[in-house]
Length: 305
Image 1 (cartoon, rainbow, N blue to C red):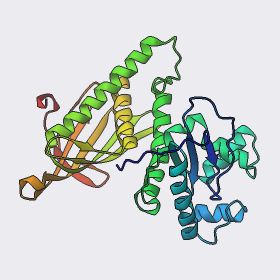
Image 2 (cartoon, rainbow, N blue to C red; image 1 turned 180 degrees about the vertical axis):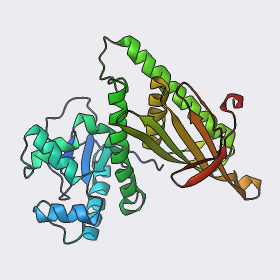
Image 3 (tube, rainbow, N blue to C red; image 1 turned 135 degrees about the vertical axis):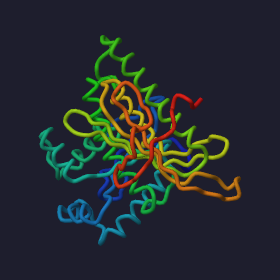
Image 4 (tube, rainbow, N blue to C red; image 1 turned 120 degrees about the horizontal axis):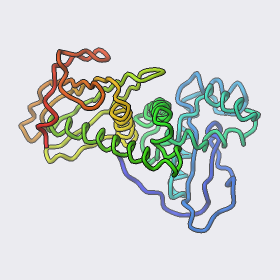
């Protein structure tokens, strides 16, 4: 992930409706010592852009011009705000949000409330200067999908994932934290055993009211340093957490190219599979096919330090 920090502190927690690229005044007075943030919703495809244009809330002539204008707005925000965050502006989600909260979708204030709605904060991504139409827009789409899965996990854990269970239920909070740490350790051992390479993890846990799924692209160097998007790491650990905490069956496949430039550029195709009956993860008992990827039983995670 690229890293670029915002610079000057000039305004407090400003939101842009995400449809018309224009800065607006802060929606609340500045607070001494508060983080200076800019939040924007981004239309991620031509169909959503046409929805916005038909309602007169976006005045760009076409989707490409809209993306160019939004990229310019984000670049300016990086110069003015300490933190710049974005999320996918999803028309159906927005309309359902307005219906639930009895808001007029035509009002800019409704779009602002939708963007900063606390239950959907998991869909926000920090923007650090990435090319908007390149990697960042697909990440926004994945972040929405990831956020919906995280909400499902939190519901299954009775609010334990994000502290919604309340301070009174400290035992449940410890239970969820322990499962989350165990899930992170499972993922770490998968990567350590794989060694250097470029991989993708695909994960599925069979939960009540639907399957929990996660996917993450991982680049691992010879020295063990791992590159992975923060939001993908959070999702993988949360899904593993739910499976372990609730003892749900699951399957995971790690596949890609094993090797590195340090080994004379030798790369070998690799695909390993693990399964879980609930309390732990172990090599799959037989070859597995998950999302079209075939994998052989993986290595024992207990032998990986």
